[in-house]
Each structure stands twice: as structure tokens, then as C-alpha cells.
Length: 397
Image 1 (cartoon, helix red, strand yellow):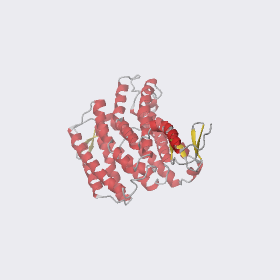
Image 2 (spheres, rainbow, N blue to C red; image 1 turned 120 degrees about the vertical axis):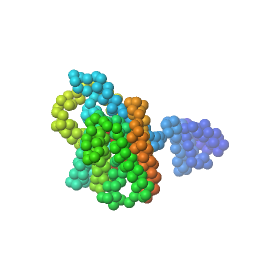
Image 3 (cartoon, one colour; image 1 turned 90 degrees about the vertical axis):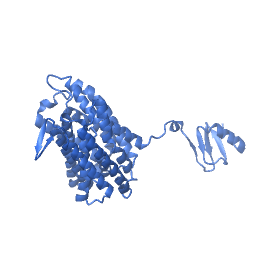
Image 4 (cartoon, rainbow, N blue to C red; image 1 turned 60 degrees about the vertical axis):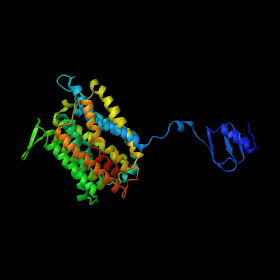
């Protein structure tokens, strides 16, 4: 039924009845009602407001980032807990939930998530635009940050405390800053420099003040824990890969970078572990007991954490993501206490305090420095993501 030429008063009455479902830019127009929809003939657009949009408000990107940080921060403690569970459920004399199995299967889960999100970027046109230098740089980054660094960090988790791995991993930001100034001629402010120095001193004290542990390695006059040294080397590998990414991969689409790094890194890690430990090392990779727990690890840390992280990056600025990501070490230390009952040692208190001061000062510098660069830009580029992940540390994959 079509109603024409109603008075303005009657129209306003009808409009109030439909106000929950309809919105209008101007009420003083000629109109009709047909099939419960308002149709405006004067050129003024009438839009229907869907109720579900009122019920499901858009979640800010920072909420997704905080959820991802809570998951990634707890990843080291969860990984150690899984290996302890495996140690109490041996298959023969083997731990079915070995760190190698966790890393290998976890990366496969991460690769599935990345492909599901970024597969459209892997098209013929985009791939043909990549030069040999691009592919070489991608390969080096994949080896360093996709295979070497995770392997060293997982090995460090096997022989030293989780808090040590978390705190020593903070070597990466000051080292990346130093290499950026030296090799890339980047300008930094005094806050970033002071923060980097504080973090570096904190990491050094964390390593040097450690009580004697087994295994140890001698470096001149110092006897250092092997786990701490491996964590430090892993951080150095990530810092170098970040510099390569800034220098040569700034124009590479984020999807190509992420998928290639994860895929090639996983393959290289598998081949290296196979060479070093033999095929028996992965003999339990299809164990039902392993997959029972890896479904939890993969679903929560890899799939859910990575999904939250990527969603948050899409809807956040560099400065916001960098600030939130800097809380990862704090979350990790709290998670280690709650999950593993691992309280910080005196060396970790001293070093960790300096590291936190360094993080705080660096964030002040980042906010000022980024305001002149791309703090207000969305995180859609490879260098931007690398800059944020530099302040996070290990994410469990």
C-alpha cells in the first residue's frame, strides 16, 4: 500500500514508529511507505540502520592487540609446561612433546593461518615484480628469524629459566637501534639512546649475575650459562634480520613476507634438526598424545594469538602497537610465575628493573620519533610490523 501526501505531523508520527529501524537526513520531503520501507522522492537518501550493527559495535584494534600480547607473553611458560607434561608421559624413553616437535607443529599451524589471511597477495603479478635481490633477502631473513632464532630460543628454554629467556630477549631492541644508526643512518633521539643503554645494561646484568648453572660455557673471565648465551644469539639473529628487512624488504607485501618466512623457516629448521639429531627426533611428531596438546597450543597461541595480532595490526597505528607490544616481557614474567611457579631471582630483579626502565624511556622516544615518521599510519607494511615485533620478543612461533 502506498500512502502519498501525508501531513508533516502524520509523517513525523510514522517516522517515530520506525525510528528504531530507519534513519533520515531530512523529514520535510515527499515520501511514501511501501513494503515497510521509506522511499524518498526528493533525492534525499534514507538509510536503514541495521539492528545488528547496534548490537555488535566494532571492537577497537587495541583490544585485539592486548589479547594477542596476553597470549604471546604466556607462550614461553606454556611451552615449558607442555614439555614437562611430555616428560611425565614418555613414549619409550622419548618425550613426545619435545621442543622441536612443538616448534615444528606450531609453525605449521601458523602457516595455515597466514595463508588463510594473505593468500590473495600471492598472485602472479605481484610475484613477478620481486627481483632476485628481494628473494635473496627474503631467504636470509627466513633463515635468521624463521629458523635460527626460534631454534636457539627453544633450546634455551630447555636448559634455562623462562624468565632468563624473556629478559635476555630484550637485547634485541637496543641492538636493532644500534645497527639502524650504524648501517641505515637512522636518526634517533636521546630518549631512545638512554632507553637502549638501560636495556642493554639490564640484559648484561641478568646474564652476568646469574648463579652457577649447568650447562655452563667459558667466555674469557666469565662463566656463562649456555641457555643464556643461546637466547642472546637468538636475539642477535632477529636484530640482524630486522635490519635486512628495513634495508631491502620495505616494498615487499606483508603477506608474501610473512608466509615465505614462516614456510621456509619451518622447512630449514626441520632439515637442520633432522641432520643434527636424526630422524628419530621427529618419530613422535604424529603421536596422538602430542597432537592432543598441540591442538590446544595451536588453537590458542598460534591460531587465536596470530589472528588477534594480525587483526589488531590492521586497525592500529605503529605507535599504539609498539606501546602495547612492549608489555610482552611483563606478561611473560607474570605467566612464568602463575604457570610454572618460577619466581624471579635477584639477578632477574636487578636486570629486569633496568630493562623496564629502558622500555619506558624507549617508548617516550618512539612516540616522539614516530610522530615525525609513520606513527599515525596503519600497520600494513613489512618494516612497520618488524618495528613493532622488535619490542615484543619471542611470540611462541
